[in-house]
Structures are given as structure tokens and as C-alpha cells.
Length: 299
Ligand code: OXD
Image (cartoon, rainbow, N blue to C red):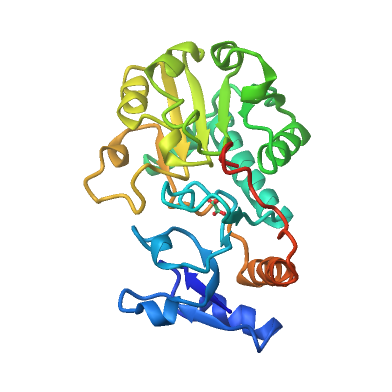
């Protein structure tokens, strides 16, 4: 049996080299649009970031999809047969990297770095009032990422409140208590567009949003309106609804919104190859691979 690699936009060979360095006998097939039914017939597993439309219907032997990412939202396509298992990468290094990125953005905002960067542009040496940072941060989603983010924020002095959908606390209440909000939620039908005009109105005036989860959590026109009106001071968006963002996307031009191209942290190909091969061995022994998600729940 073979594994199909569907890992664009990473270049061909990026994952196969890492997998073959650990297991030279692994049978891998790089996906491209011209693969015929015969080549796909004995594919039992897929390593993927996202799935081209209609692909899974062409894989009669498919039993397992291993994401190359922490989130599996792009893999839970409606046509996926119920018995196919989907697993994600759980990487402590990646969680730590994301937490560092959140702390960087939170401190950048709380310590007013953009103000001093603008002053430097004007050659203006001017001290502003400075206080140690003790702001209250709400971390939405306390899973593998969110809990590490919350821990590191607390270590640098923020007062952190973790919120999850299962906590029972109304979202508006958690939002209203914080000066900064970090979105670390999985993307599911329940959390899609969760951060909309109503959520921004529930946040404190002048609050700041950091999103390291998925762009689709945020209703971007609502966010732009909230920032332009001053309801929010701004946002750091490492993820956007349309990735890569078009050059004329309205988000680029909003003062106070910082855009980064989904770089908060990445798992290395070696980590992904190791977790993938461990899962493949279990699959081929008739066992369940690690980190299989609950497809109903979406994470
Ligand atoms: C993700 C990842 O899920 O980069 O965004 O792993």
C-alpha cells in the first residue's frame, strides 16, 4: 500500500525526503493532477495540508489522513467516508513557537512599540508614560496550543483567563473582561465567524485582538469596522480568511492591524515525518494512529 502526499504549497520532495531519511522503504506518491485511477488504487493513507475537490472519492482504499498541521479543518471534507481516520500533528515545539509569537505581539502592543517606531521615523525622542504590563488577556481555546499560550503569557506578567466553549461562561462575558483577546480555537462549524461585530462590541473599548488560529474565525469586514471606529485598538492577524492574501485585500491598509503570513510557528518536516511514520506503522498493524481527531467535533 502507498501514501499519497498532498502537501502543496510546500515544494515536491519537502516531506518525502524527511520521510525517506527515516524509512527508505516507505512507499510515497506525490500528488499531481494527472494521476490516474490505477496509481491511486492502492493508496491507504494521505499526508496532506488540504484536499483538492473530489480527490477522496478517487481513493477506494483510503483509511487514514494525516494532517501536516495542527488544525484539520481543511481535511474534514463532506465526501470523506465515515470510517476514514483523520489525525493532526501535536508538536510541543510548535505550540511553544506560537506562544512566543503571541507574547511578542501582546508585548509589542502593550509596550506601545508602534508609537516609538513612528517617533523614530520622525526622529522624535520623546518619553511616554510607562507602566509594567499587567493587562488581562482572554485566551479563547485552551487546547494543545491555547494552554501553552496562556502559560507563557502568565510567565511574562499578563493576567490570563482561559475560555473554551465548554466552560459554560458566555463568550461575551469573557470578551468583556479582557484588554486583549487571543484566538486559539479550532475551526469548526460552531467557531466559524465567531468573532463578528457582536463579539467586537462585547470587547472593552480599545481592546486588542491576536489571532493565531484560523482566518475564518474572524468576520474581517466587522473587524475592520471595529478598528476604524476605535472600538478596538487594533489586531495582530497571523492568519487570514484568504491565504495568501491578495495585494488589494482591505486588511492591509488598516492602521493598527498587523499582518503576518501564517508564520507564528511551523512544525519541522522531521517532526511531521516522525509522527506520520509512527501513525503509519500503527495503521498497517491494524491499530489506530495517534492524535486522531473526533470528526464530529472537528478537532
Ligand atoms: C496550522 C499549522 O494548523 O501551521 O496552522 O500547523
